[in-house]
Length: 398
Ligand code: ATP
Ligand code: MG
Image (cartoon, rainbow, N blue to C red; front, side):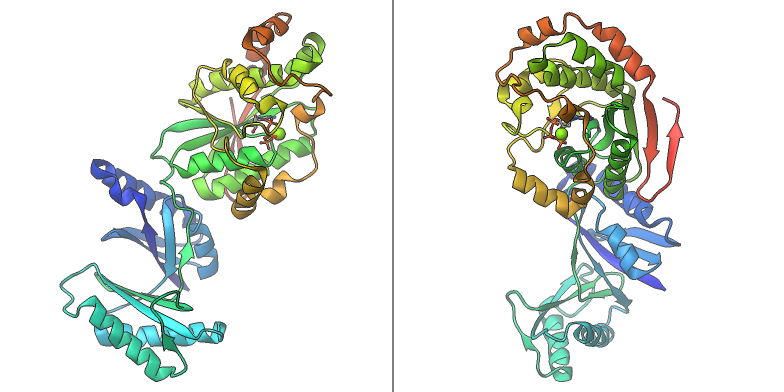
């Protein structure tokens, strides 16, 4: 059963000389999102993407609505670009829609001509189709503002008729925005932060610091599941699981407890710096939000920031928790993030953490640590795996 879609993209239409690169990348990403479902044809057509997929329509739509760069999509029927043909098709589609949504009372027809060789002006075509719909369904009223049902007709190489619009994530196509490492803890915030940066076209490689046995392997599974959600939007991604146990032990032994979380976070930044180099990443991403916890005061952020040479992107810096939770629910990470397994930092949060630390203070506190050896050993024992949107996970040597 073939399913045909018209996909709309926004911002990349404006990207000047790079437009072709953005469009081609989006077409490739759209094709990849459905490649395992069945034979597919994906192509550009006058500022839209047409995707024809031999697959279940609901499943195909669910894949396509997650592709970064897609503003919205519509399942379409494709007919001859003739008034009579698309009018008949529109009436037939309205009939099917009414069967599923009998509460519909108002409608609007919107026609666009990408191919101006089609002789009838869009307004005239819209009113002809509208008349036909009203003749067939006399209880429907035409309404220009917020109609219950929007019938869209796009005339290009063929006529594309749609009665449904599904929102996409927007943003820019993955692969057009360079690379960044995203520090993902398994909490609510960091997967959302990684998603926001990935939505801007950045290829994101998650890094998770794992402290087995302080944190269980269930915590690691949780992070892998979160990465799988991200991969449904961004495509297959690499995940670094860093062996953090020895570092955690050393910090516990040698750093005063009020500064432990900060020392831990600084060590994460140093390791991310090295992994970033390997991955060709030009930035790090964290889920920090100013003031949320002691290690996220402006002073704490400054002290953590001082441990890396890479710019740190913090897309949630000004967000309230409720906003972050709403976003996590919308993208599908929330239910995974609230599984109960502890993350390594929360196990070591002292009763009275420093909230106004200085970098000098941290440097003094870390004097008893052999930082470069600890970092090198942790990286040596780290694992790089590949996480795909659906299931299979491939281990690859670090
Ligand atoms: P999250 O909800 O993502 O855990 P948070 O607000 O609880 O964030 P912290 O636990 O203070 O924040 O950590 C701040 C940031 O440091 C996280 O958002 C994440 O980017 C990074 N981070 C913390 N712990 C880890 C970890 N074990 N592995 C990878 N990144 C981590
Ligand atoms: Mg956390």
